[in-house]
Length: 206
Image 1 (tube, rainbow, N blue to C red):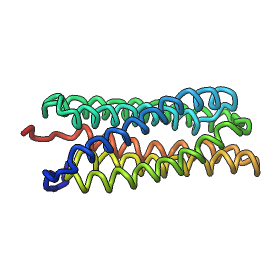
Image 2 (cartoon, rainbow, N blue to C red):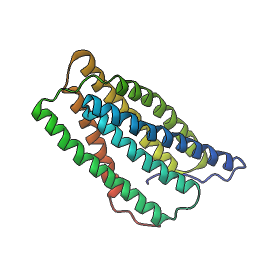
Image 3 (cartoon, one colour):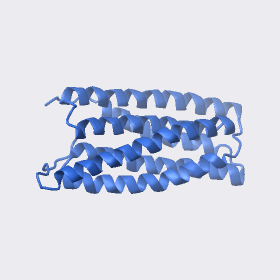
């Protein structure tokens, strides 16, 4: 993954592993709830950005699951490699969905309705994901665990995505800028393409 770190052998290693698991379970639980909340908000408001961010939550669920496997010492390198490539495939599906949906919305001029639920959830997600990303970085550094550090970066980008979606939803609700919502969806397209490339590029197995 490009990270170099020395694995911790200190007496507090088990405590750090437990903390890493707790952080991933928190991320997992938050995103499971988020998928349901954003699905309802996206359907009610016709919001491309909210729907796309809901799909991104599914990807974050997959990433957290991979880390939990690694922290439990149950995933060999080949299994982790396959899981990473599956996450990359999810990113590809997300790109296809968003590009098609954004093109349809812009061509038809569909106006999404204001989404108070979407605004509230993405605002909360922005704050929570920033806190989780910071905690994962500290814990991953203490453990010398490049997998947790890498997933912490995914969580950080997730926070930035929540911020971009939030801006699009607010601009639509306050100023009636309907085009801000699909444009916020394009921010997720850029992120998904980059992450798909990183996950699917060939890597030598240990």
